[in-house]
Image (cartoon, rainbow, N blue to C red; front, side):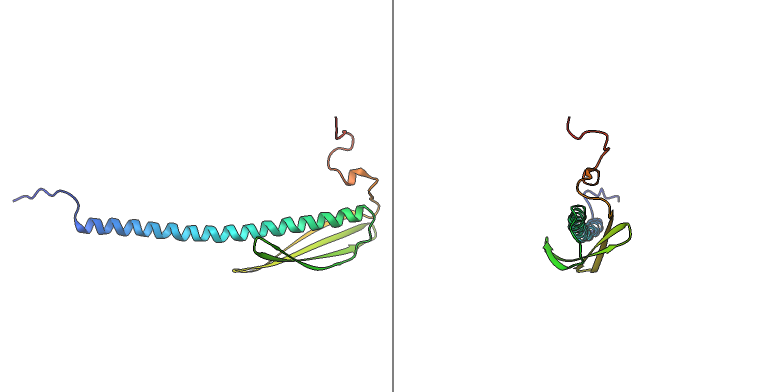
Length: 142
């Protein structure tokens, strides 16, 4: 006697449920990793922005003729992360080298970036090529 089976059996339903739940657990783990990576990248981006701003200020001060000294460490909080920033200035025979060092802590450890720039001792604010990017032969306004 041959039975005509209709619908799905209990074992098929359990296997389908197992496959779907494994996939959902994998997606949840992937989402958690993406959130963690996103937070780390956001903190790194904030550190670069903070360091670049600090470096630009120091380079501009040097171009305006100010005497640059090593600046004391400062703490800045951005987006829930505390950044420690230090700047050092080394004056050579022809160049002034400026370094900005940024440190911060995250749940996965401590992180550090360092930005550097150098300008000529002979450059000053009257030389607008040092202040404005672009070809000096082309006027900026038309």
